[in-house]
Image (cartoon, rainbow, N blue to C red; front, side, top):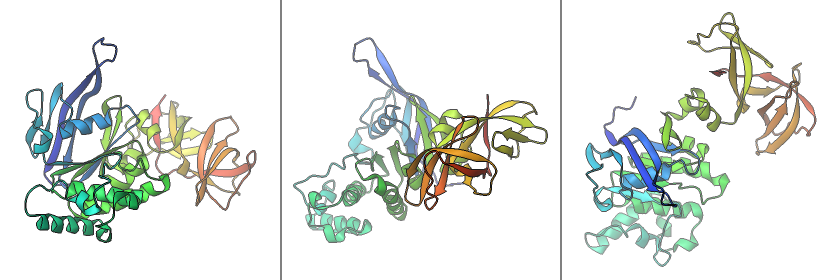
Length: 356
């Protein structure tokens, strides 16, 4: 458990916007709370319109609060009575489009926020940060001469150069090729951790969130549904919304048995320790693609109805005898045709269930 002091805390904040038709206000963020320890990386994860970017803007100081308060290092920076100007919060921001100045060199972009001291000293600091993001050889280049990933690292160096207490990142990978996002998220995590930077980002992509964050808050309709580690979000979702949002899976009906087991169409699963559901109860079992294993020797057959090639594997959509559809990851050298029946078996070692 992290013993570092809390750097950022949001306590029961609410943010409203006026309705476009003038008929009152729309509550965008509702009674939202979380805290972020120093040196950790957190992520607000959710679909478009859930309020996650609005929370980021409120932390920056760009949006007023209608309730609650935001604290940095224990000092209130936003409440219904207090609103510290953005420039005085020691918060850095990396925008979705990176917002680099096209007429400035990479080094000039990095030192743009450094206002004090001789230019030679500022350039020295800028070069130090470019070295930390492995772009020291691009100091005299212009943004249009860089790849998307390199532009992202320049934007990060610029945000970190003034040494803020907190870095905020708004969908930082959305403008990049989808194949690069997870790798670049891991690279960014390495940079932030190596420099002991506390960061909060927002994204709608769970794979980006998993690659970079220590803590993830899954958001829906302006609220955090579950704030947890990536591992526990995947293996211990608090409700159906989180279970369906995190990972690709389906719910399949089952019936509890004596001895803490549940029977589903695919066979029997042992419920995790702590499950105390009486036998004979109808429950829903979450099956993800990695819970189903391809097995030519298995008597259990399923029909391939869709498939998506992912390089190392296929994501198959399979139809069971009952008509229930499930997902399965299958190594790509097993290239089965649509309509073909393949052998499968259960490979779940952690069972997630919800009462019907």
